[in-house]
Every structure is written in C-alpha cells, then in structure tokens.
Image (cartoon, rainbow, N blue to C red):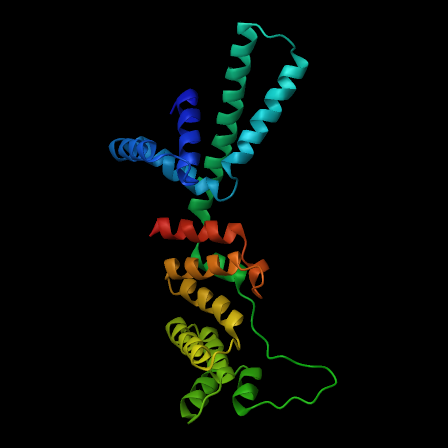
Length: 255
C-alpha cells in the first residue's frame, strides 16, 4: 500500500478500534475491508501492532518531529508546507512499518509453550518463620513433589477444604494434566461462591488461565488474563503485561 493511502487508512483504523467513527463511517470502512482483501490484511496487521505501540504515540511523534522541522525551517510558503506534510507522512509511514514488522516477527515466533514458561512460577506452600504450621497429609505430599499421590489422596478424602482443591489442582498442573487442573480450579471457585469467600481466588485465576493456555484454550486464557490485568488490586496484576495479552491474541489468530 502506498504511503499516502496507508497514512489515511491507519488513521481510520485507529479511530475504528477506539470507537470514534460515527455509524456511517464505521459501516463504510467495514464494507471496504470486506471488499478488499489487501486492505483487510493491513487492518489485521495494524490491529496486531496496536497492542504494543498505540498509534496515538505515533501521532505525538509526528507532531513533535513536525514542530522541530518548523522551528529549524521557518517560513509559511506553499512549497514549505507541502514539504512538511510529505516529510511528516514519511515519518508516520516509517514508524508504522516498524510496528507492522514487529507484529509479523511476534506472529512467527510466539508459541503457547514459550509464553507459558515465561509466566509460570511454581506455587509454594506458605512458610511463616518463627511460627508453628500444621501441614495436612496432602500438604506434605505436595511439599515432597509426590504429585501422583496428591491426586490419589485428594480423591480419597470424604471432606475437602478449599486448600485441598487448590493443592490438588496445582499437583495436576505439575503432572501436565491441565484438563483436570481446570476442573479442580472451577470447583474451588464454585465453593468460594457458595460460602461467599475468596480463599485462593487470585491464585486460582492466574493458574487456571495458565492451564487454559497450555491446554490450547486461548480465548478462555485471554479472558482471565485481561480480567487480571484490569484489576489493579489482583495479586497477579503485575505478572500480566500488555505483551502477555498481545501474544495471546496472536495465538488466537494463529489457530
């Protein structure tokens, strides 16, 4: 796509994604995207890149460059104004090429395994220095990495605490049994709802999202990670970055 046309459409793409187009403009752009596969591809790449560097930052960069250009090249003639516009368009197009190239690079190299490994941290049973802690048999098995026995012991329990659900789910993750882990996390959340408590709620959110990721349920993983990222009081809020969300979106697109 030529630079001038690209610049025009990238501005419209940005307004579209931010919901700033009126109904008529929105419908017109959607019709153009539907009729032009090359334009649709440009839009897809643009949307992919926007999660890393929002286009508004480009607008600021272009404006700052534009102002510097005017400061160093005083004058208000038509020829000078035309040069400024052309120069600004080239800067914008160049920055957008960098963004799209980055998006394509991420598209090629992002994998569920790589993302999982970058986010996963083994959960540890809490240890309070100077205090006497009472561990259950299930706790002891988990502490000694006997994950198979954790599951067996959990299944044999007549009554289960919220902690039992969580430890069994974490053991299932360690055994790469992500479907079982998800079911156990869901049971824990159901019990929290019944008893109006939040025990292990944040931990369950995070590790259930990781289980969905490893299980190939990218949409579910994305939904939970977005919820964590938007909740600044969440225990794992700082563990979920914009890059995490972006990479999950790429995994969805690659399906």
